[in-house]
Image 1 (cartoon, rainbow, N blue to C red):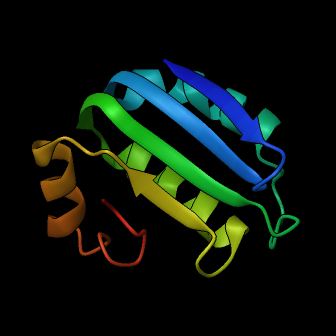
Image 2 (tube, rainbow, N blue to C red):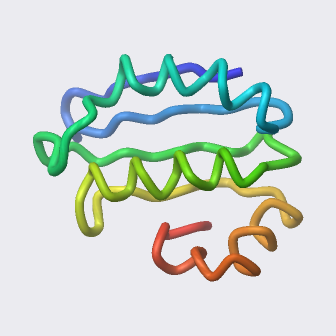
Length: 103
């Protein structure tokens, strides 16, 4: 579902997701996200990357988590990497591809 790695040298927290990020899956991973990513604005200047290489579907619940995490991280500190074409298109349709730095 989700695993976390932290690069101490670059201060980058990477959350790697796998599978369908539908509403049920998001309920399970949201607790893990809250443990690894403090729930407060401007978290210590660390960069956060959501790696979606192995994700083939996202729900609005997952998009909400992405937006919330981007807000917490601060400007330019959050990005979404390695999206499958369908997932990337979902972010584009929602108008969030630029705001969330989707690649």
